Length: 93
Image 1 (cartoon, rainbow, N blue to C red):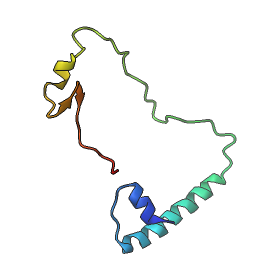
Image 2 (cartoon, rainbow, N blue to C red):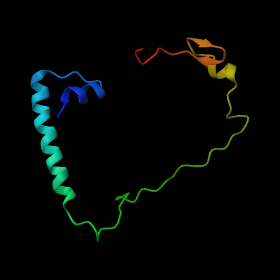
Image 3 (cartoon, one colour):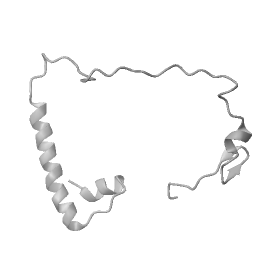
Image 4 (cartoon, helix red, strand yellow):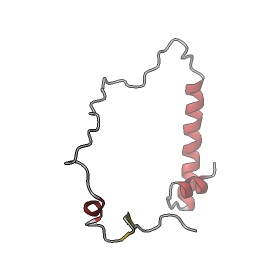
């Protein structure tokens, strides 16, 4: 288990001691998943939601009162350029 690579992907810093401990924990987790995969689930129905939640969103309605102009949308932005927000880069070159 390449804990250093996983930590890099998750943007986490781990000490060598933590990496050693996590490697064992990841291995245990994968063994448990393998055990679960051995179960016969052919008679089980799909259960995407188990506590009865329902979608309670409403359809979007665009009205003149709910639409911001470009000027209004950018009015509190600290940095803009040609009707766009300017934000710091998050990826290294």
